[in-house]
Length: 503
Image (tube, rainbow, N blue to C red; front, top):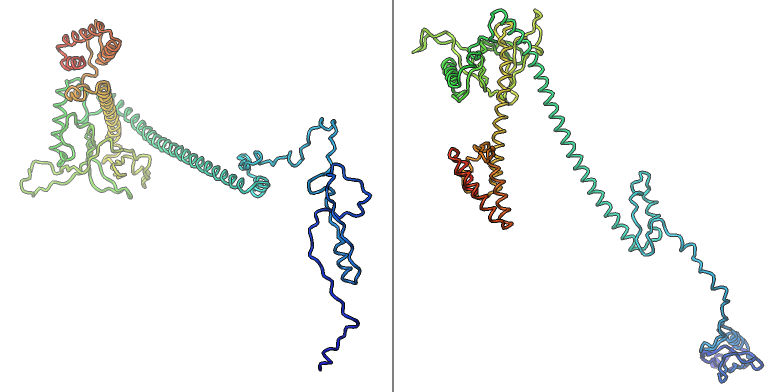
């Protein structure tokens, strides 16, 4: 076994392995055959040259590998480590006349960029284009943008969105306001057209009534339009106010006595009187136009009274046998300004005889769209036309009176506000302030001319100016003049108190 272990397959004698040294840093290029090369210009004369490495000893494959490794060359500059390179040649003087040429890429700017280092600008006109394609727009605007520029562009888009939203909201509010205004105008126009239609109908009724009255006057030879007890004749119009008030009072007392329960609807008031007793009427059903019950209509200057006719019980205790068999009981009553009386002759249906069922009927439309239809007992009764005419006249007089009263109140309020605003101390004089509405048209004589109380205010303004400008003599003269005017107003105590208060 020991002999077998000593057996080796190697032929020949074992050689000693070569020792390879560690790589060393090369401080300069490998000089090859530098003995006959001239020195480098500008170089240091005493510069040490690298020693050439001796070639390895030939010794087989290993020596060949080492030789091949050491024979590898690297591209190093010919100058030494101290930068002793040859100097650069000078530029020709003719090249300084030429300007540097900018590159084409730097000369062209993106279409949506404001400049280098800024975010792309949002094109408002481009966004308004109906044919805009968002993908292409964003790609063209942000093709060369940085992350910060993209954020700025996004913020700009948000601001544009907010501004557009506010403009849209303002436009919607403006359109809504205009729509409401147009709706109100349309509603007003509709109401005016309805009133015009009613006025045309009333004009037709009035024309017919005037023709009938003219024919009646020709027959009777009198100048009165009607003989109804509620209508004042020309002789009554020529009476004094006291006689007319007494006559109206007697009319109301007769109405209270003749119509049971009428005083509950119509309490006694100054100026209230009966205009017309329209006589007997029949209330009709609104759906079938059939007769329901007998009624009687009374027109007052400010109300319309409807009374039902009922049979009086003869066997009732305490009943007067001499009283008529029919009695009137107040059923409904409306203020004239809250009611509308419409002629039904043009809206009725024809009966079998060919005559209009509602030719002699009227419709009274009260508060809350509640309507009632009444027809005269006698066909072609002139009381209907006369009633429509008197209703229109009474409503016009009421509106005229309300308008005059409103104007008077506005003038009184304006006078009070005028004097109170110019002198806040007047608010403490409640009694004098309450009487200003009565003296707003009062005139006082000043130097032969009639002046109102606002002239006193202008004099007080001039007095304030004189005091401010230290013209005390003129101010004293003006005060004495106002006091003299106040002493002369013995018959106008209110105006005298007002001037004394101002002075």
